[in-house]
Image 1 (tube, one colour):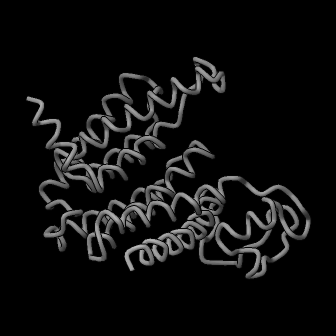
Image 2 (cartoon, rainbow, N blue to C red):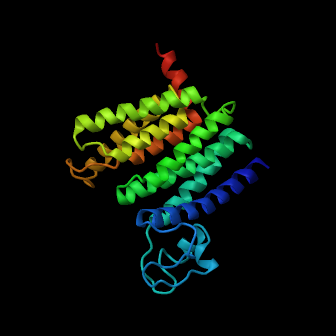
Image 3 (spheres, one colour):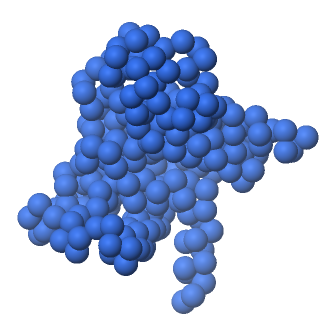
Length: 254
């Protein structure tokens, strides 16, 4: 029965991932995510239901439009698979409860932010600011949940994340984008204090490892920058589930 629920949440995640792809396509272009119905960007043909089955349609069509055969972004497949895997993992770790609902909401926000930043190099206010309002609202009314910090903790985490990255952005003179500053503030609101430090440290570690791997494989030049928002989002998602345990482990070292 447990396996059946994991599979169910995996399928739910791929469906949510399909919607997140719509968000990643339309929000950077200033288009509505509500309408019109999805269509091919190349031939503008309206997609049928068979063209939009998460994961299956992309593989069946070999990543191409069924009508004009133009190449579809690989991001579509990876976002659907990634969201499905995340939802299944969150259920496995948290069980079927309110914490799971909160974690899937935050996870969806961060996957959309990650996808847009990786593809467009943008962290949009229209993504970050609504997520901040959600985080503040949850802290005000649902702080008894494990995945929601108290309003004081959220405020402290948000202030620390925003302030720390604001200093980095000013000192680096363009080395850190203002979108990263706002995203760090959001992560602080979501994780609270002191777990915002765990998320930031995870972002630094994963970003550093990715940079080393890309340089070693000669896929990136030494002077090229990586979209750090991607790694902030990854750190935030890991912290949602394992932040408290990682913080306790760190303290135990001393």
